[in-house]
Image (cartoon, rainbow, N blue to C red):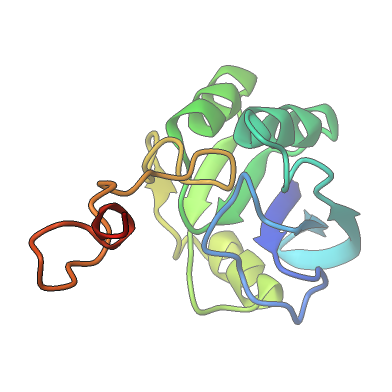
Length: 147
């Protein structure tokens, strides 16, 4: 089985990333009979994309031939690509990539049936403030109080 684990720097000793689409790297692990036979680190070239990071990362991993992915939260667009590609999604946190792969092999990770995270929470979509500024005692925002 070929499994991708969302990670920070990559490698079997790295922790599972809480985000999937914008994870800095993916540790690709090949298993046979519940044993790890190979691993490699794949940098996520889409982690800093203005938009579409999840979709592009999911397509890249599907093209690598993975059958499962382990990570923190799966956004709706990323989850849709994985579902359409037949890639099973599993949530894990607080584990190393190696521990997560072993837990998956033992049937201890629960499969996510769809998105587990909110859309648009990546770098490309920052929210805007209310524009009121800080109150300086005049009842007006800071910027508006100077004339």
